[in-house]
Length: 321
Image (cartoon, rainbow, N blue to C red):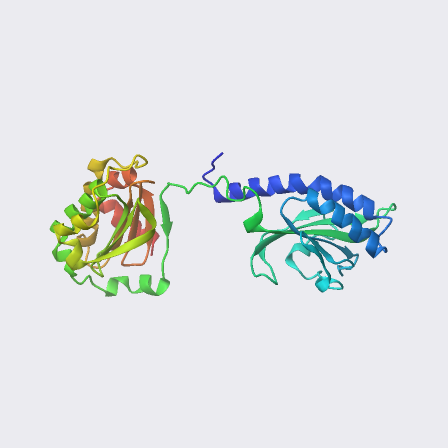
């Protein structure tokens, strides 16, 4: 299942974890009610219960004031280091008293390992319903099953404001012609050729600094920086083997050059507000733009091709400040 909303993907993951933990922790807490002052008995029960808590790093019990009264029970045995520790000020204890008997915390950075973690807390009550302790279960996010499932980056138009100091002086600055500006008649066809015929799936032109950065489908974890002399020399195509246009590309190959040609127009249309860098990813179809006001825009290539220059300079000055 995919969802285009990051918060919704996180909510679904939390629901899965709550369903996985809630009933088990409630049943275990009921068993502790009559043994809250019997450390060895509780630790033995935690050891027996740990295999039922998939990916759990630590199981432990606290007293009613949040002080730990057992060892940490781990996959590798007992860890006595945290016995007697006051956990009441930890983020996972916030809001647990008086509001709910079970809580799955927000993610936080663990105190010891300095890694993103989650903690589930279950209130332990006696037969009179009085709170007499807490059962805690810690999880390392990197070890949770399926924690990365479900999120898909949105492809709707997104605008991100940049540095206010830059936006505040945008009309007091002026575009200075770069070496790339002088050679766009060479740069655009060569970048198009690299993307259409040589396996470049993501290409970015840095107009102000006269360089290009490219990512290749056969080596997507590394990027290459091409200086102005390289990106205006057709021989650069010999450095990257010919490669069929990737089957996952959603940008029609004939639309690559038109995208870069619009970059040219956005670079020269205004002397104060102008394009500093533009990128195209043919796999996800996204265009990225960074303007002199330090505002950034991201949108699908087809929506980008529909916009005219007047639209862009209204969007940049009105919405990016």
